[in-house]
Image (cartoon, rainbow, N blue to C red; front, side, top):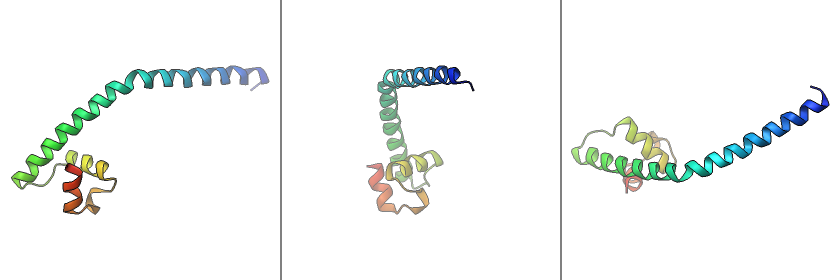
Length: 85
């Protein structure tokens, strides 16, 4: 690349960085609401599955492991109960 072209590449990178920040600021409140809604739904589903005595579904296992910060197969029953709340 010629020296002048680097300048345009840098300008484009700065513009993309600014657009990403604007998009994040615009979408963050909506994403927070969606996460809260998903947490309520998964918590209710996990409680139903535990009460029925059936194994947790893969979606619930993934959600529990994200909340606990460990792989699901390494979680104890107490940690699962604590993650579900």
